[in-house]
Length: 299
Image 1 (cartoon, helix red, strand yellow):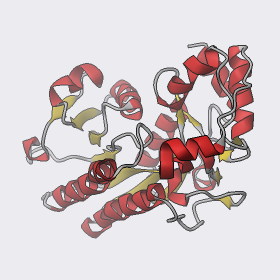
Image 2 (cartoon, rainbow, N blue to C red; image 1 turned 120 degrees about the vertical axis):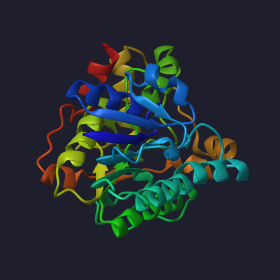
Image 3 (tube, helix red, strand yellow; image 1 turned 90 degrees about the horizontal axis):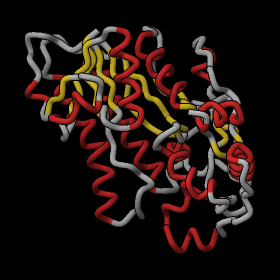
């Protein structure tokens, strides 16, 4: 299969490249760092523009994971513009290119996030739940998905992957938390009662691969482990895995003062269920948080 990938130099993208290279697929990564793609993405071809792709060899599938990190810095006006451009505008550009192809791909798997639901409180959220729309993050995910859905007009099967925070041995959320927790400086966020969905990187890769190849898969899928936990439980599980205490909570007022609206990413939560992916026959290798942490921290 010839796969065009955006976001290939990111955490999930690099892991997908390793997985698909082993399967023998031909990979093309659209990236601003096109010259670095072969070394970052297991020998994949890098292109700086879609126009550089040869029309003589059509693409079989497109996987769209591009997007500037949403939690790296506060949501200033300029940061919001960048987040919109790197997700929504890029996806519009990608779908417009698909529409110009004489032989378009058969499927678009496009990224989204559980932030689509906003702060869900205690509600159980499967894929039938409505969007949050109360905060910028939720509205961004809604616009991102709407941009991808336009590919249906060109005859593509469209899959939307609403990803929970991804746990990885290097990088991602766990990469940021490992040092302070290793030093005994970790603690719950706010009350710690907010629900915290998560997924192991290996399961995220396998899930995307499953949806890419399953021809009946279409629409939105929650990419999260079957057992969400509250933030306080996650905190204690990580501290136990590192054999350290976790006794330094971050007060909600301090997070709101420091981060403004972006504090919803830490103080809000989603009690998500992976109903559709489980119904599709997918099986998680790391369904329990304690086992996932033990696997990753041993790496």
